[in-house]
Length: 360
Image 1: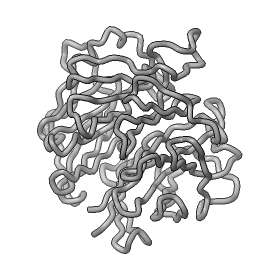
Image 2 (image 1 turned 90 degrees about the horizontal axis):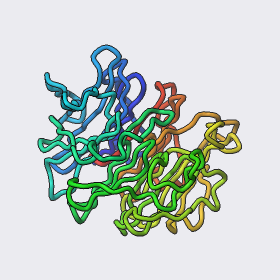
Image 3 (image 1 turned 45 degrees about the vertical axis):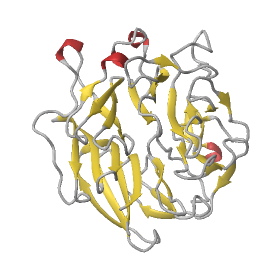
């Protein structure tokens, strides 16, 4: 059994493979050189299909798939993700690729910029716009965050395919309970300090949401200042920022099998996007955000200034779980013991935009 780590960067996709229990890594690439790879998925429902959402400054955005772990790639002649002509907009980029549950083996979801959700029924080769979210009456008031206006989190419910949560910057969390036929905001308790009404129905700049492994009604959110937990599938939220050195950041990662265990990478503030105290520290909670502990063994102990973006941290599906993150300065670190210790995977890559890992 090998572990595959897919690293999307501003100048292509790099693949790192470990065959010795994640002690050492062999890095190859770049695939799709000089494209920004903002979304990656490793779909294990049928073998191990890789999906990559990349954006070329010349050819525009697209999605490619590989069924041989990156040895070859298939990209359709027609744009796999495209807005219908009646919408009057064009695709900026694909920000998220999320396979549905095992009971829907051909369904893949894509979150895009501008903020929209697309569904594929052929494993990610072609996608159709989810019109009910696009036609939502709130959409015209969803604004662009600093990184653009995008649906960047897509969380299908693992036990009920009719339920899903998505998150966008800005706009907040939206939920469906009828397979996408209708959508309702789920932001009660999330503060938007930058708005005149700091507790709006929608308009929050949610940076990332994650779903608990053992309690699927429990969600976690990293907000634009604020860290939250929901125990009712995203209807209402409470702060779990106490114990963190700062409440600003981008990633939020839930352990793939251990309920209540989550990971974050705090930054100083929106106006100072550096690690708190200029130190490289991942923070872990094992009680759903009640307490937090810094994880530093093996990480740089000197001044550290790069940030970690919302999709540049992930966990694999091994036992014990591996945890990974990449930085804007092209460094990638891995933990093979759930964050207790870390070691470098790669350095001097282009800026890391997204990471996904799995046993293959």
